[in-house]
Length: 438
Ligand SMILES: Nc1ncnc2c1ncn2[C@@H]1O[C@H](COP(=O)(O)OP(=O)(O)O)[C@@H](O)[C@H]1O
Ligand SMILES: [Mg+2]
Image 1 (tube, rainbow, N blue to C red):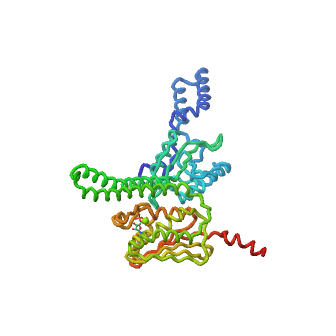
Image 2 (image 1 turned 135 degrees about the vertical axis):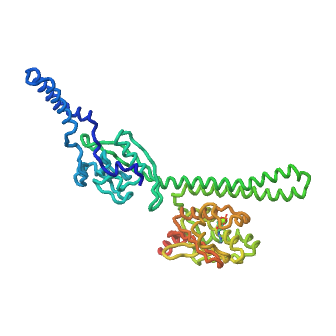
Image 3 (image 1 turned 90 degrees about the vertical axis):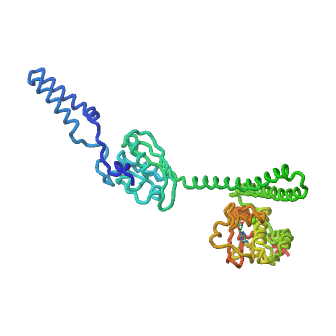
């Protein structure tokens, strides 16, 4: 701890300036002065004696110990007693950690949030025992001197990194109560984290767009310059340029989808979707890609249809992304299994499994982060944007489901989407009453 916090750590009753104490004692001093003037007038006191009497009076007023309005002892019970039950009730209702200190920095009261945020706090103890940030202690000291409110931000490093902002202001407990210092803490950690993530995201997205753009510009220059009259080169370059432009378009599509899904993250889609039919549609559509890569694409669906509540187009994107990844990254396994089945306890499962190289365990937790790729060059080669699994995760979350990734390196990977099965399956719902009636 820095020594700048010492004055608060050792609670010292600030000595009042002599002039203030003289002013405080003005009535006693005035009465004594009258007596002295009287003594002078009746010739009972000589001028020197009168002067000496005045000097003694003034000295007594300045140095004599006085009863303070605020408790002098750092006694927990006595100190806490200064804060009314009403004030304590208000404190306990506030949503942020709040501490009330006396002007020397002793804790008078605090709420439960303060206890949760700071751990050990005790009434009557210096605030520096619980709150160690020198910035805040400086602010407390400044407010005790000038009553000018202060806002400081600081970071706690242990046990975990936490950003906080402390608002320190002077106040009064009740209309006649002692003047106090109120410290309110705000947790800025989430805000900082999301700011940092947004910054990273913009940097990543710009970088991903700039790479194909730079290559496009390079080819345009070459076509306008050295390759101007070379028809072979022109054909070759135009093909590459087309691929790069497609990649930019895919990236922009994915970015837009991601932001659209984030916008409605808290709205559960309610349409009834046949997961088996959906998986069939996706495997049919990806058949040609599988064939081109020499991968056998196999679909297994539960004999009973599996319905979920959701958004059809979004769930198609989920199945598409997972199956396409399995074909592209698991190509060497030569086989991809897609399955839809009923899970335990009313669940609906979509499982995509490949027999390729799989994913090393250290990459698993980060796989669904935006732009995270095990091998960036490989992903780019295969036309990837690094946003596929991020999209999958967001869609699954919006559906109230879970995405489970499992992999044994060398033996392949399996991606399972677990959703809640819809109860009101249309055939059953339509058939039941008829059967009962017949
Ligand atoms: N079935 C899989 N087998 C091995 N690695 C995979 C598989 N699916 C995804 N990955 C890894 O996860 C990364 C992120 O996937 P994704 O978000 O879909 O991005 P993209 O496919 O555009 O690269 C991929 O780049 C790849 O490294
Ligand atoms: Mg992908």
